Image (cartoon, rainbow, N blue to C red; front, side):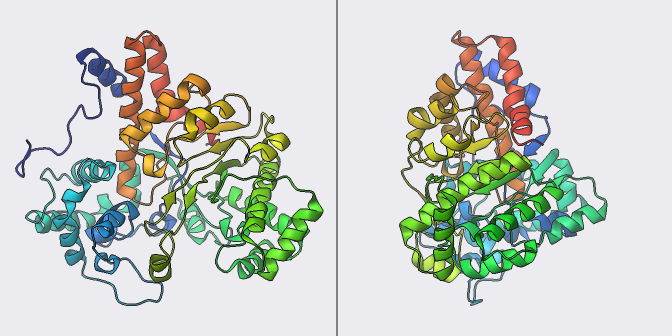
Length: 474
């Protein structure tokens, strides 16, 4: 077993098959795509990083405090989020000693054994920062000091890392209530890095979102219309979508609890909207309104060309206590069963046959891949399948995705890979994992007679780069 004095953290043939012939072909395919530019069409990195180009504060703020993959595992073992420096909604006390947070993380690094988080972290430690010793209580301070020293150097600032990571384009994700200040600053700076936005209207299409009524009023102010009327509300979306497009946006994104869609008569939609503004809308009515707005957004996409992404099936903020103390996106979003066949029918009846529309479907319910999602995407021209997402953004999850969708939807009804991350230094690691898993899968298809070798080489490039670039119109 590799111990504390190892000379490398990453095995060069990680994730490749054990069979020598399959491993050799996997390596050959991977060598053709490993250095392709990264197209990151959907994610949650902070545009402020690229706008201000300031050094990251410290190792804890880079790797622990903002990463829900990391702190949810630690919390599951009884380590309080305040001890990890995760901010509180009320501004109450949390740990601010970065070294203390890092030591706590390092002491518990064994909790990540065999998880994708371990692979992403060690890829960043070795490939980005040059560390080759496993993180532990004994190595914590040396690792902290080394990373902290690196972060003070110009070559570790956000823009330099962006270029070092070979990122061709990255999309951040903003609310319609965002003025895109940081995107404006990036553009004004003259920097050549391509950072675009994406339109995430959840705060103004979900009547159950906190502050919904105030959000809609502010939405109208930003859009220059009265968004408290149904027609003004729809115009506000059109105006804000156009504004987001002016800052490079090519997609909208929708994180609804279900995949439910509706295509209601306008008077019924207006009645639901009016009721939402009273704050007295039922849970089912709120879900119906969200569902109708997916169809409205799809129709707007036919007008303005934005790709529509649907990320359903997460019971978000499952812990009421964590939500109250620390707010959204703190590791307590849990997958749920999701119906697509019936839920998407209203939207598909309305726009599913439109060749110029792209609707990208994601799931946290893997049972739906072969039963529902692949058959739907394999039939409707408007539909494409997003990659293995969130809890299944892992080597095994990516493999299951290919195995359960390819036979019905093929490769060209999928959209390559997107990292969907807030953790900047994990981006190259995540894309590397996807490229390795896909090359291993392609190699086995060749060696079992289901694919020709020249086709595998072509597909390796498509899965790593081409499909995402085309699907997201980048």
